Image 1: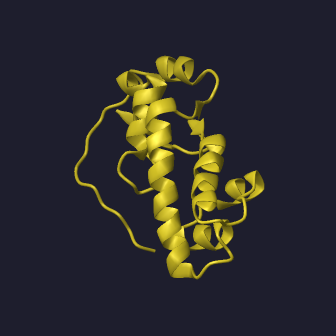
Image 2: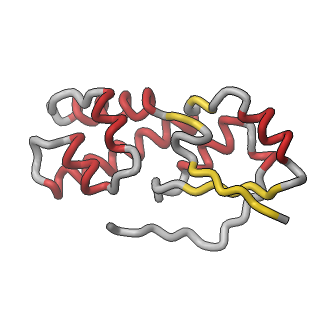
Length: 140
């Protein structure tokens, strides 16, 4: 059977608002300037180091990376409770393609819980074959 690989962010859902809120919870906690929505949009697809430089430019990189780890944890927690915004007609599209293709999801967000938050809150888990071989995180 043929398969389709979906990149989660920007293809199946968008999480700009959740990311914006999470980044600014951390910024406020450390009395740092607010992270703009524009900055949030610019970091999608970047690694943690480049994201930290954009989110928290006024702090040393090693501290910015620590803040990014905190932001990601807050964001995954928020997403697991409230979800992101699954794109319109996504379920209808998956229904039409189901049986013809196997579906796979990838994400450059390596943290455990991120894809799971999508699967649980979108209610689309039933269309996907869930197979975890191993969890691998890459340090870029």
